[in-house]
Length: 447
Image (cartoon, rainbow, N blue to C red; front, side, top):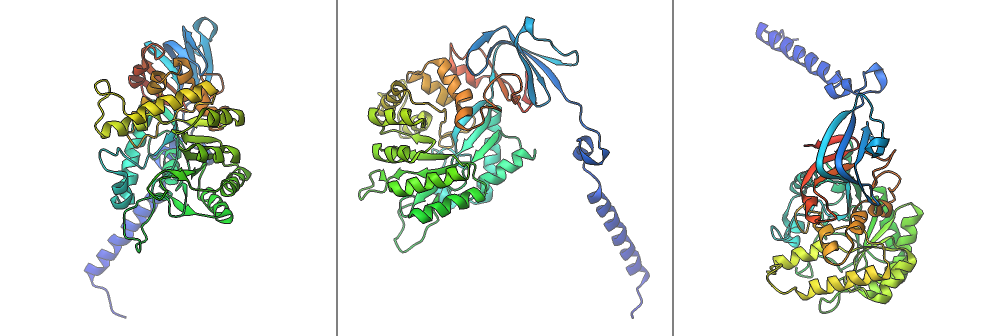
């Protein structure tokens, strides 16, 4: 055996000492862990209590003047007239003079892994942007969404970004990044050969923006696989630009759609279907889907069937409004394009038929953090302001199967709250003037 020199022995001792320190640090509980409650006798953080004092409260059903709301920990402890609510002595008071307090808003059709098409086209995002880049950008988009008062989102497809939405949902739940509560649908499902990107030589196999499948057994297997990988909702493209000349046509047969919905429901996953043709919508409705997205080509007969079967419509008005502007339309200056006129007409048909309207904007087509555009447009296209606010709170919560947790300002509900400067029933634009955001009792923005 060779003997070590004094220098070698000294270096060895330094390495050992460093390893001991590092291992000791790894073994130590984090500062956050020491503060948190739980096993090991660690001290729990004191529960925060707030009393919020706005000018008015929209509780998910109606507007109330002179209400106060008490929040203790993660939940709403009391909400009602100031004279009828007992305020705990330890409550921190937050004055929201002139403001309206609402349930945290809900976005029912989001794509956090996309960014505005006037920045980068959809094709280029799917084809050229690395997954790490798209995921990093999504963390910024999620924070912008939360800062805008949206405390829950349903994200309907990663558009070529695999299962990154599942990881983002976990990062929010673990407190690694700030963001809204997420319901995710992972890759979404398309019929083989119908989706994009397109325009490449036919001998090339190009990665697609959603998962291709076909046949009854194939679609059943795909539904189960996506659920197993973390999908809360199953998203299906019921029609797309698949016709011989690029026209939009239904892409799944009735049997395939029936099998997909039955499979999803059997494992407690609701189903959302992208559809804009009467036949595509009809097949989805008859299959028993839970929501239809877009519905641009709907007819009075189709919307009547939706209402009878209890299928909700997510109209995504803001997406078409944005893409029309990307094509050069100037709202308020130019005549409305045909697509906008058609959207107005079909939205009115749905309202007249009594279809449940879920507020969802298709954000990602336009800038994250501006989701309230959808609620403004619903009012501009003929919806009552209170009904539009319900759509983005209590109705969206019901559509998402979360109406016993969120969407209302009521005792026992999650303290997901936002306040805006003014009265949205008089001017929906005040939804962009956010003064306070709270999710699960934690303040993310305050006066």
